[in-house]
Length: 169
Image (cartoon, rainbow, N blue to C red):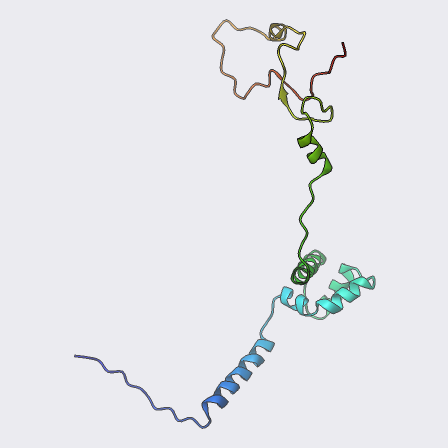
């Protein structure tokens, strides 16, 4: 058997437009009384707060004034909110410029790696250019009678933090 729903009749004492306008007005009043976040409140009064900072008031002084009026905020949070709001307002008016690469990075990529004395990258030591015998440095290590154990970490043998010196011959 099909179920039928019972609908009650509506007796409006006003037009639908009047009802809509009244509900919208009631909603606006509710929004004005609605508890806001501290951030929203700081955002609404940003201009006077910014003027106070420009006139020499510290964040702590402004926070004390706000606390006396029932707005509990720390100086650090206040500073963060002010920076965030400034960034939001600035973001809509002007685009952020891209960072320029550092001159050192450009010079390093354009120059010869071995010839640059300011380059501090780690590179393998050329074995033919070295006057030292590579076995001499290993003999200083103690030897064991058993088989050599695998190293726990990669070895840095053959690497130097500086390029080899250039010999003038």
